[in-house]
Length: 433
Image (cartoon, rainbow, N blue to C red):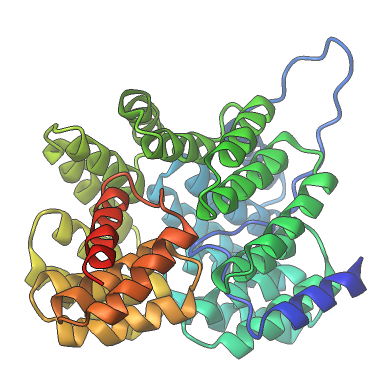
């Protein structure tokens, strides 16, 4: 298996990218849940994390100098913050991890601080912590995962490649599979990305891991425009883990793509209420606007969630730029997107900066960033559509036609609002050829 994964990663890609900004998937492998006939259902992920925190706290009352348990507590706080969308747990995580280091310099605490830094989007700090951890233990797969995520966001793709390959060599499990699969997706190798996640799914035993794999497979199916395949994975994932919010997000997206706006809004509302992050609230606001409803309250809540993230040590001008665009403040969007791109030249940021410049009438400046986003993530129909928009505004109908055809080929359902607009633009261009 390990040899096969090396072949996949080297032959298929030249650089492995981050799995997800701020994600700490695989920092601690989830133990499988053993079920017996008549057994009660397993606790939800947030409940299991709360139990882990309580056990660590009990042990530390008895053994206050147990540096390993302090490190485990800090990691548990970071993971619970991710599950519950509560960044106010970040200072507690930092305190526990720093306490662990104060008792003894150890790689577990350094890896935890790196994961916390990634969660806060302080990728430069995450790189430093992961590098320190690897000086102590050069075979720490978790440290390589944290390092890979940080390096990708910082634009060091060669370094990220090496780090994820180390993960695959040391521990070819779900965390490494997911990162490799995501990179294949970015490179446009969606079939190979799906194949890798199918391998991960076959090895998954814990309901949360099954739900995660199904969610990734649903995203990959959606990226190909396969709404039926995406729905099948989402339904199977929710059957395994009904509490897994990303599956509801995915279902809302598929429903909206099918024109079923009412149930899509219902799912988006549930997700925004249960995990009120800026991105879930922005997605809900977009659907409300599409339905002709006022999204102002959701935008206000997204702004409040963003401020809470920043107040707890987070750095995220990308979300600030997206909020500004949603409110029509193009100047602020350009300023914030430029600041974020200077820190991390990731495709999402390049695309956001291109959109901010386009909407502010600076299409010549926008063109380079849009091209950069498409080159870095060629399977994104949203990116090709944005490049087509800019090309059309600049009067380059030939380039726009190429990108519009590419958008249709990649995924005509990429957006319930922009998908139909892209289709109409393509039809108009083809009619005048």
